[in-house]
Amino acid sequence: MAYPESTDSTSALPRHIAIVMDGNGRWAQQRALPRTAGHRQGAKAVRRVVQACSERGIEALTLFAFSSENWRRPQWEVDVLMKLFAATLRSEIDRLDKANVRLRFIGDQRAFSTALQNYIVKAEQRTVGNTGLALVIAANYGGRWDVVQAAQRAAADVAAGRLQPADLTLESFQRYLCLADLPEPDLFIRTGGEQRISNFLLWQLAYTELYFTERLWPDYDAADLAEACAAFASRQRRFGQTGEQVAGAAHA
Image (cartoon, rainbow, N blue to C red; front, side, top):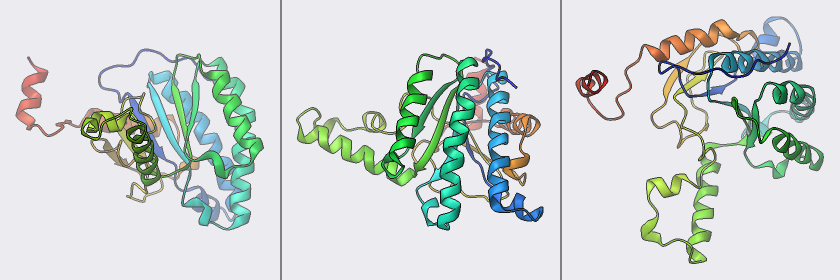
């Protein structure tokens, strides 16, 4: 199945969706299968959701594929995840490129094998000119790590004389963070029933609408995404204003 190219979005749609893909292990356990089977089925759910976002005209989709805390899992499971990560990249890159999807990765990639790091670079370079959905894979990523690396880069610019401490504002600091070139997520989805952010995009989620579902990630599909988008469209986003202010501005 080929991914379709993006279409125009509407104002009721989130521009940027961020997803914590939770429940692979439980999905497998419910079927008396090894956890690896859940991860492989979860990779199929990624394809369905990428396709659905492209069809709906979503501008950006960020998926939490592997957190900086996931290294604490059993070594055999980490090894399987790394192999699945590389295999999925190889199998999906043609479809993504043909569908005009721009692929990028965020996180500390130095912990990955040299071969995987090289393939990540090649995948990003291959799709860098595409203008459709921006698909961001967060791998060995943590929200606290993101803030620290941004602070380190800002401090380096101050030490080099490229930035004055007084010039460091919320807006200027944000430029050092991952995803600085994309709109902040409008909608955060977590599958699997847990209701935590789990160190994902801590800075970027400050005003994001949070949506939690019991659906396990391997079962997630376009209908589930449509339900989350409908919930998003029904909410009033105030950004510190009163409901009356927002309603008045909408009718101005």
